[in-house]
Length: 109
Image 1: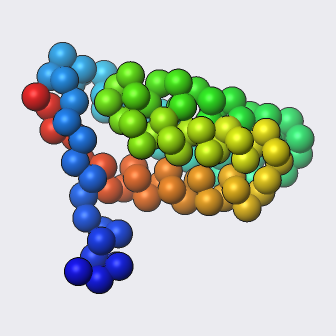
Image 2 (image 1 turned 90 degrees about the vertical axis):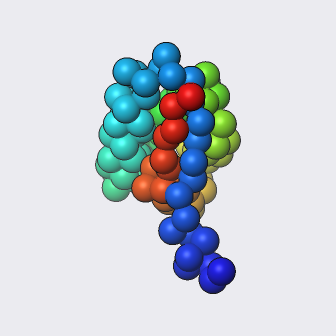
Image 3 (image 1 turned 60 degrees about the horizontal axis):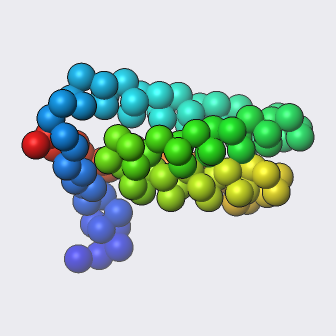
């Protein structure tokens, strides 16, 4: 399998059936986070990096609770990059988040 094919593979995440009503909204909020981070990068001010840090922190805290351990990891990286006002790090985290959201497929059990 080539690297391009691997990038396009679905990321299957098994979620408890009782979360089926709230998971779509949770993932939609993460899509909104992508847009918020993009706006913050465009502005590039200290307070914008603080909002990136808060988004990352929130994602780090909630991802695993919904069954999305990788969102916890991505959120932690975004939080650290936002705190350091590391534009390249935030951009990398943003790309990871966007790619994850494009590829994730939820299966309810």
